[in-house]
Image (cartoon, rainbow, N blue to C red; front, side, top):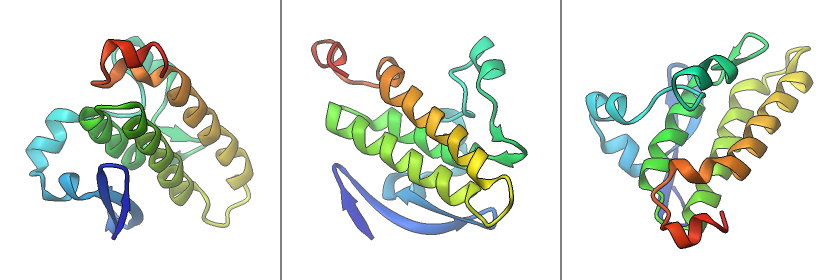
Length: 133
């Protein structure tokens, strides 16, 4: 178990892939997770612009956990850690020795940069702090 910010993270196998998950996610029911998470896009038209995969490799598991963590974000530090774990989990999903891995890693880096700069509005960070997130 690794403690970062407010979360205790554990490496678990989910759908055959190694991923880090916060304790709160692991303790939640499937229904709770389903109701609080989605895919990689911000919903509606944004889901079309932001696919759940990178050149055929699914990013859904990393995006789902990131959604969960964003639901628990209460500070800039929380958001920082949620975004960093998102990047790490995406790397675990796509970096598996295939020829397309370098291109996939560039796509996942773009996802990470996007949430780092634009993701604050999808968190519970107070308005004063959001201006700085």
